[in-house]
Image (cartoon, rainbow, N blue to C red; front, side, top):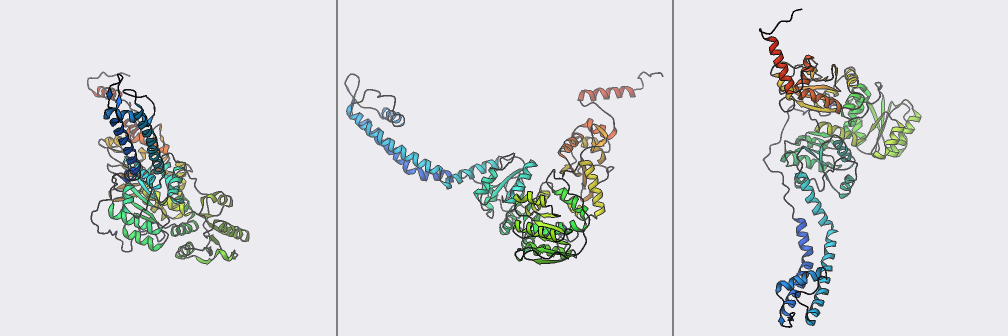
Length: 589
């Protein structure tokens, strides 16, 4: 399929997917860290030496000073007795004098030893408390705990690099979806913020420079359970370094990166990034779609939104005319280029110059770096021209209530847009093929698809699911295919009433190299097929019954109810065999 110029991922100019030549190099493995042990030995060396010297001199003195036994005969304490006496005396100062009462000389020496040991232990405990508060020591312990937690992950996980506004949104969405995540952040404040976030699971977090491949190795890039990498920092150079590291060291792991510059995005694609999301460039594409194909825009944004997000309100196609863009950074030129590519006229103004004249315009985009100034400019534009199409750029999440109350026609939230597209690509990769298909649909066709999905699934944004037909994921279907045919529509019937359907809809059927979008219900299912569907979590749970239980699938396919237990099925076969026997008694009418 040939994609239009505004597609999410344009093809290479020569039509071929190029790959870099590379040599096999292992991902730097997280070796057992001894940093904490070395710090303990280095900081506690002098205190421990002092304590050992005090004990050694004390034991030697007690063993050398003569004493007397119960009969008054001369007695010298053994080294063991002296060590035992010194041990409990220095630690507890309790238990008495053993094995015999001490002489005055021994008591005098023991008094000196007691004060010396108190000083030694006080010095050692002070050094230990100072070590526990040392930043380097605590960082070493945190790194060791992080490595152990990553090694204990036994299911697919994603490495999320960057925990700013985009990273937080991605982590919260992945947590809602039940996906395991490992976070790498550049500062401790981000890790502390993650620890205080309202997440259902405790996500492992590491402070480190992601440009170092060893840091990605610590985060589990070399693990067989690593399912993808999301590079969502606000530094293009860091994101490009991550793309290079993942592509060269683990080319089988998908990497989705954020880029704020078209040149950096091009370099990432050439280096083999699975996907590159430029939020400024992408918003221009969405804005053009919102103006030219509103129904396609509603369907597309609803599909990639966070699960449960309500579909946007219906809108009419907007008329052509002059667009005014107020911007003080590279957001403005990016939007202007997209509008120009779509054949729309635009002009750039600076927000600091004050409110522009919007009397003869059809659209105004308040796209400065200051949220308050953007809202003020949009408010003035609405007063001057109430029919104006208003788009507002939002950088801070705390302004959500203000934007909802103001109600512009379009809101650009870079974090939300980037996270939605990145997760749509990496959580269910094949689902993105359907999203690209939707991107090129005419408005009338998209409206029909949206109406059908809303009727079956409700108004909340659906989840996506990937099903591979075979013994592992669909055992009941695999057994049924050995004796007869199964059509796709039967799998999506409701087990309680086969005339109704579950809250799930197949949107893509992959068979070999062929892709069928929105496959009809009478499409036959074959072993090895990949079915991508959208639906609600409850709908997917109900769908699983048809995939795993023979009696449920038999009812959905033929309408005949069969016993669910092995004994019931065996008795049913015996009864059927007896009815087919020629010697079976005939019943007269």
